[in-house]
Length: 260
Length: 274
Image (cartoon, rainbow over all chains, first blue to last red; front, side, top):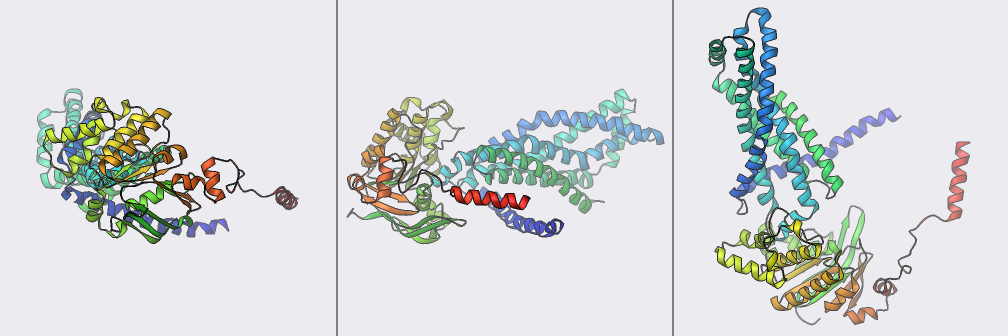
């Protein structure tokens, strides 16, 4: 009869998930609204934009460069069969702007900055720093969580723009000097086929959503972590896994909604 | 104990899930006194501190602090009350990314817009009081356990609180540091005209500075009085705790089935396997 236990077990799991999701959503709303609290610090926000964003730049640039170069090779391989290598610029740009740029930026951000954020907040909880702050009548949501949430929302779209630019440049370096595609055609095709609102803004909107999602998951996992070394460790792993899957899931939904 | 009570709990109950942590605790902490709450580890002492601080909500009964009930206050009013309280955490809870100076300055910076000169003087004054003015530039990672506890103490009193809560202030410290912390608790309480609640299981050090004490066991107060009165308490459990006897009302052996029950159980299992 063990097989029949599956359904009630699944039901129980889903029911247990509902209040957790509610608490996490309340955490997000209060965390974002804490920007209006008197304990919110713009200096802290800048520090977090630096820590989460600027320090992720090197990783993003290297990843974008290789992604663009691979796109150049693979796109050429597909297009040369139809004599359409002139469309290579468009293919590289649209792949990056609409899909790969936002998604890869978010996945890398979850791995590099999200994990660090979870570990940092989790350690602060385990060492009673959050409780100490609360006891000093300083709201930890305003001082610790809000600057990190807003920093993620600000940093990911900017990182995505940089990812797109470097990726396109990487694609160009393979397409034009290596594979012999005409440089003028590469840029002209890209210019005529990429639209600002339909493609660029679409990608940036995705990046904004992913930034919010990844930072929310990372901050929540740290805030709700068991206050032990093991608890912080497993929260960090959960943060990266959940954020990565959530980015891919949300990407599908956004692509379906924004698809033209 | 005739002075006006700053903290009072009445018929206080608290449970974690199905486990009852506190079951009807009544205590009264007069203004200006140093009161200790002692008991075995896991006996609900820290929970009691958190209830006083308004971090937890009682299942039944009430806590009054300076005439207010922390759990009934909204966030702003609770923070108003907490800005008049200080708390020393068991593991110091210093902010690891801030220097000693900035740790002590943290509550002042968050609550007041003081000119740098005044803020500097206030912070150095508190660091001087705990003997660590010379360590103002250090990071918490560069401090010993005893020094970290003293910095945390300076931070707890930097706003000149009316009530200071100490959660296991002596745990994990060497004898010299324990002596320093005990002296500082007494000296700061007198100098600030504050009221102190010390939660601890270090009998000797706590009794050396406490005016009054409560012993908590099984979620209830089993004895109370001055340190001397507690030593003479008729409660066997209190006497076992204070003298540190390994066996007594708190048994040495964790409850286990008796040998006969176990043998019977094994026979049953073997029979089923056959």
